[in-house]
Every structure is written in C-alpha cells, then in structure tokens.
Amino acid sequence: MDSTIKLYSYWRSSASYRVRIALNLKQLKHEIVAVNLVKDGGEHRLAEFHHLNPQERVPVLIDGGRIVRQSLAIIEYLEEVYDGNHLLPGTARERARARGLAHLIATDISPMGNLSVLQYLEQEDNMPQIERERWVRTWISRGFTALEEMLADNPSTGEFCEGDLPSIADCCLIPQVYNAQRFEVDLTPFPTIQRINAHCLGLPAFDLARPEKQADAPQA
Image 1: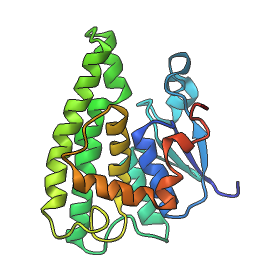
Image 2: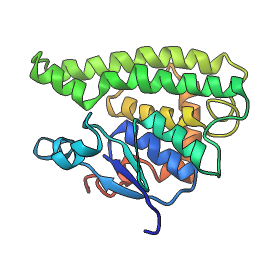
Image 3: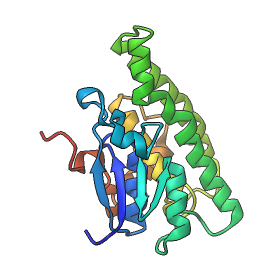
Image 4: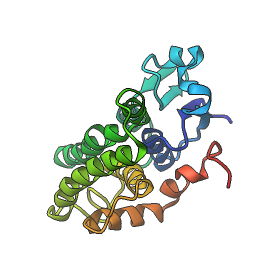
C-alpha cells in the first residue's frame, strides 16, 4: 500500500476494533498487521512486538516514524493530524460529552473483560469458564445501565451517541456491543444502545471494521 500508516491489530480486540472504525471514518489508507493474542502463548509477547509496545497490548499505530499506543490516544492523534470526517464534535461541551462516553466504555467497562484479565482469573484464581463469563456479563450490564441512562435522557443524543455524526464515542460503543453479544448479555434493557449500534453498523466505516471481516479472523 502507498500509505505509511500501519495498525497492529487483533481481529477480536475491542481496542483494535475502535481504531479500525476511526481509520475508516477518516478514510485513511492503512495496513493491518495482525498480532495473534492466543497462538503459541500470544504474538504480543514476542520481542519484536515488545519493542513496539512494552505493555504488550494492541493496538499500536505506526505513522511514518511515530509510534502511538492506546486506542483513545490513537483516535485523538488521527483527529489532530488528519483532515476528513471529524472524530470529535465541534464545541467544547460536545467534545467533553463524547470523550466522557468514550472513556466510560474504554476505561470502565472494557478492561473488565480483557483477555489478560480473564486469563488471570483462570490461571491465578482457578475461576471456571462459566464464572468468568458471568463476571464479564456483570460488568458490561452495569456499565451499559449507566450508559443507557446517559444516552436516553440527554437531548444531545441523536442518531449517534453525540448528535447526528459519528464520534469517538461510537468508535468505542460498537465494539463493546459486539463483546456484549459475544458473552450473551441481555440487551433488552438498553434500547438506545441497540438503536445506535444498528445505525452505525449500517455504515461502511463500521461494517468493514467488524471482527469477522478481518483477514486474521478464523475462517468458517
């Protein structure tokens, strides 16, 4: 590809999924470099990847000589450096709300179901799979309960989390709904979340970023 942008990604990583959406919304050409988090103990633990990210987590964005880590930082970097569709709304109040919703998802809900957390619960606490799955459902449901209230009761909510244009908040929401569905969370109590998710997935930028459409996803 003629782009210098590379994204180190894992097909089912929600953090990687966020950035794939953002790159698509910005219409930026990029190359996906697959990092398998489960094969042979995880390619993220190899020395080559450790050099890129000592935390040994995806995603990592390479833009020319720049290395950018952490999904929300990557999304804000793309917004600041590149023209095109905006990932943050126009006013300070709107940007603060979009960021707040994004952080609720990415820093409060998502980490509770991270692969590293689930592996710790299994290996260190001997927690059975059925209990690990209940753990994930519990934290997603609690987070979505608050998020639904914030979305449903706010006049700033439009077709998307903030207004009628997709933002950093939607980049975070759609991967978390995917996780909720994967762990069979009952989404009935969250109609606003379901509505926004369905609307987003009808757009190419979101649809093309789906985990099952990634080249490193297992083939049926």
